[in-house]
Length: 118
Ligand SMILES: [Zn+2]
Image (cartoon, rainbow, N blue to C red; front, top):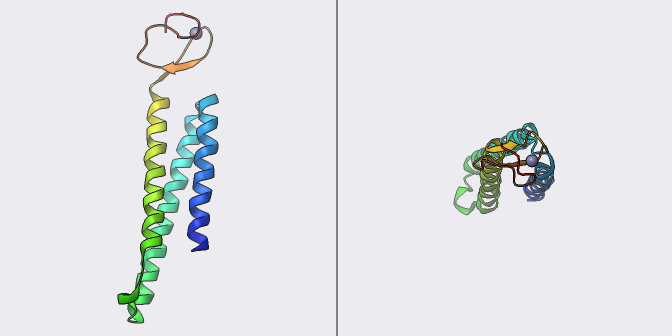
């Protein structure tokens, strides 16, 4: 269980870190690398889940098997993945003001900070 919790904690820290950073710099490349890392974590979780299933199945212990922790961990990772995808979409929809360089929602005709035409 320790490994599973470590995975979740690591991913959370990464999401928070880059979430904060994204507010400052909107660095889409970094968000994409977080997305990739979460995706890798999901794949590792599936591998571990399959491995556990295989071993328990071989030992005829599947009936007593409990996969709740693994499934919860996967749900958590999927939620983080969705959140990152949304953050990437938000950043993609942003426009940078040509005058003050502030990033903002791309659906506005004028800069909310300096009033320049976007
Ligand atoms: Zn501006």
